Length: 300
Image (tube, rainbow, N blue to C red; front, side):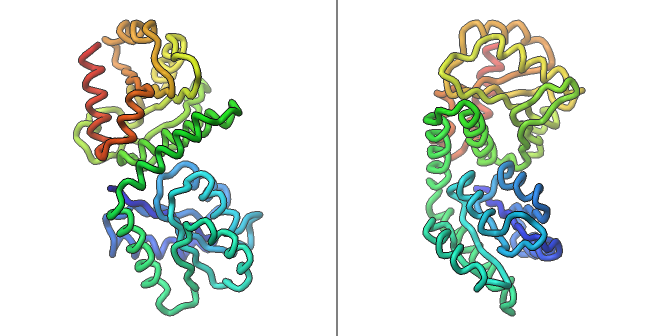
């Protein structure tokens, strides 16, 4: 299992120093840092992380660490959180509230001479818990998927399904995933995955993977396929591989349309609700994803 840490602090030097130490002492952990308000909110929503290290006091921002932790609990409810601050007494009331979530693993004083050692100790304890209970990842996906399916607001329905899909691909090992990008034709793409995974199978594919998310009570029709295929064609060679994932099923006419484009360089793989269930339940999501790709390539 891949473990990722997101370090959030408005003082840029501290996250940079912590990242250096993590890279040296725990090279098997992916470490991301964020120090600007917009960057923080973007990374909270777009990155996969199962540990967040959050500073509380942020003088230059409209938000503070309590606001950030509440946002993390909203978009990534299974992430564990380590709180750090040099001003802990000022946040006593807010801390007492968020402690009730059960996700706050430790609260560490930045002024403590053993500050870095305590950060590592808390992080190691979290990772140990994940290793002993790998089903935590499955529970997270089940929670996000059920939440997306039950949502009645159309806007939230789409964004929640994107969050589920983002987390699904993150658990496969893809760590750089961004939302709602526009190509050169100003077509919006739900998710763009940077294809940097250390796997020979995927290294043969294009630098980016485009993902179209459909959380709908209708089958995905051929027009959805045609529109998504057009987005692939307009990436200027950066991507020739797309994934159309749906909480419903794929219409027969859509498969027929896919066969018509089979000889072209662009390729779209379908993941419907049956494959989603299998991907949630398997321990090796990347291998199953490769099997889905192989099967559909053969079928076409």
